[in-house]
Image (tube, rainbow, N blue to C red):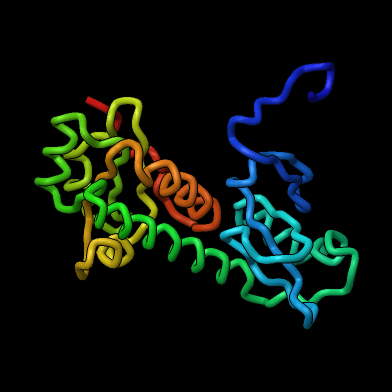
Amino acid sequence: MGRGGVHKDRSDGPERKCIATGEVQPRYGLIRFVAGPDGQVYPDVAAKLPGRGVYVAAERAALDKAVSKKLFARGFKAQVTVPADLADEVEKQIARRVVELLSLARKSGDAVAGYEKVKTWLDREEAQVLLQAVDGSGRGKSKLSTPHFGKYIGWLTADELGAAFGRQTVIHAALASGGLAKRVVEEAQRLRGLRETDDGGRGRTEG
């Protein structure tokens, strides 16, 4: 039960507090960190490593603040070593998770790539998520619309999407509802917070 006797909605899973912003939010919107036996801070993007964990919001500004203000030492209540490239390493690991999840979705038949296949899924209302490469042609991308009540992911590169689909590059992809779609969206949102991009994450509106 939260403040004022109001029950908190736990449908999004356990909540944790960010050491940089002080905000409490569902765990999927945060990055977990652990301190190794050597006292070095390591990102635990899968939240599976043993030991005490501290959490930082999946935003580059929050992570930069945690590093510059030495908030990890406060969170762990110990002297720790923080790698200078921590934010870049976290971004790299989460991008890898998104690509791996998309690859699993492709193998299970829940994801397709290529303009025509994606357009067909959108026309048949089989797609729940539209993905388009951030470095793809704006004109080409504008020809496809985000699914009605669906999601848009536009901050992966053509090379990253290509890796997920076993190709050199991919500009357009789509995910069906169910399956791994929810996990892909959650991980992609974490990546968006860590990645500097001009893309607004909206795509062209449905219809």
